Length: 428
Image (cartoon, rainbow, N blue to C red):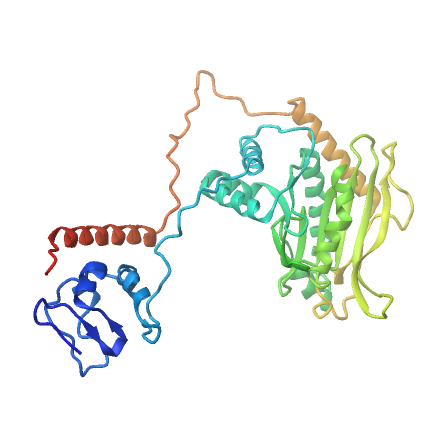
């Protein structure tokens, strides 16, 4: 082993298995001169990377990469060094036309522009395209906020189906009335005694939050993102127990498949999926329901399925009248709102009869008409008054302190390497 007093460079540190010949060190690694020599009796080097002029070990390793590749196989670099580059290599990949098209649709929705009469837009988009789309959306702060808080979409990587939901005013008002009625019925149980009281107190309406599901398929794990119109969840449950979907035209055909996702991918934790279908061309309204059930296949094995327990039951006929059958309406068991382990011994139920559902739908239709016709009482601007808006501030760039520090470190290293190159003289 040789420690060179000639120029103060480290030629070998046997404790760390690194061999750096003097000339090669100058030509390839460009190790700066040290003011002290390593302590050979110590288990750790007596110099620091700051002395070398490089703040992080990964910079040193990158500088010495050509040398390391030329070393014998028996010499192993220390495991604490990181061999990955500081930043990912540049790529020429650009978003596909489909990604840019969907991005433009989302922007128009955010800006309040009507894309089409349809409220259900489906795109076949690959997983990589979906990831690119979400990445682009996140870069636009206002667009990401809109998507997360005011927009509904579903994505299934196994079918590569991206569905953009654009519910109408009628849809939203009708849904709101139904949710309010369910909450009202739950409050009735909080005034009773027994287990139903405590159980009902713990059931909450969770809005239309997004559910991240995962499904096993032939290609491994498929991501499934679903955003129900409304869901009710027990505080001690992981998944919602009751999910409500208000459907129309294209969406009506999709409800059974949505029920499969909700029920199967939660192992039956979702206890009931309610589909309320509105036919805009007529006055007809129907109810469908799906619940978890087990069946045996041809091999005698049990299989969980989403069993449809109510088939398009009419709650409002085409003349606009309610179904007068005593069994008609939206009936929910209190135990539907949580998994069986939480609902043991809960026997109560309630029924929202067709007349009430008809009333809700009539109110929603009236609200929509008044909005289109600009009817209803409004607040008038004071005479001579103008409107003053806030000044818009430029959007903040998505960044982090680590990104800034890393960029600063890289600039400092490049500066130091440049200084070393300019002051280096080969010794012959």
